[in-house]
Image (spheres, rainbow, N blue to C red):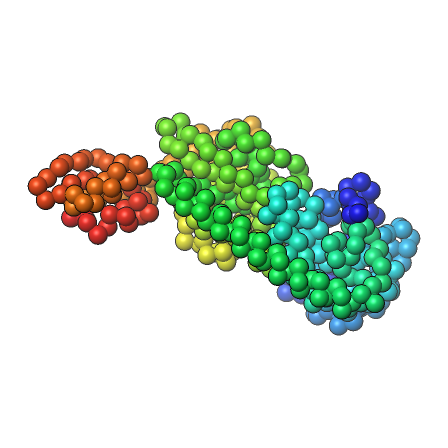
Length: 419
């Protein structure tokens, strides 16, 4: 049975290799973020060992001398787990484990572990398991470097069995399991597309909340809709996306979707596994980017989010930025961001102004066109009443005249009949 890492805190040491081409402040911020990830996974951070060099050591990553320093620190503090703020090769993990007699995770392995803990829906669990398997498969070397599902239990930092005699069996089981999970995800993806088609038939604008992990997206969703989504001061406290309907003060209906938070160096295995979920971002009418301006690293976090949004193919979408936790900052300290509003998702301060800006940007996407529909296409006239705003309608000898306001999605349905 898999042991919950939160039931027993794991004594953990951090390690990082700082390359010369990274700014010192950015390196320190990344290490602090890694400590937050360890805390989220249930570990107790006892200290960190860092090394600066031009390139990783092929065998020990940090170099022999620095690795000995890490070993001595681990022994003196009874460390059970060492987490690297870098990506390690299977041979490097093996060599470091043998040298330090500690379990070793790299950054990607830790994020996968956290996603495993926080996935609650069936689809979320499938996506995390597939990401774990895809990450683990090329790393199976017979020395127990498996993650939770392949390793047979123990939770974060737990020691695994050697597994040399099961190596080929594990590889075959992993490949077979990945194939099964792909089929299950394909079925779930078809169901999501059908639900999306049903939503698209309604004239409801889709607003997707995006942002760095722990920026306050779930708190904002709860404030706007009363969704009751779990809110904790932990990275990746919520994983599975949540969609709720709300009505703005002017009566406009909105569908709000809270998505998984982004983070630096998000493992590509997770991005690929969660592709069907993350594609919700690309179908948005507007992105609501939530930024924690109380975080001194907020500008870099904003950049990370925008880069990952672009990588998902959603870089063309309109964005409104919610400068969250603005009550913790002096007004002159707030970053300048176009189309942004300072808010406090927790207290509700600035929420009305934020909604006004969202509605304004959505309205900018609206166009007014005049069309003449043949009478045999009267069904399109009914669709315009349902999906858009019919400003004028006239039954003429040669067809039904409509003056309609709507976005590209709505206007595209009658574009062949424009006057």
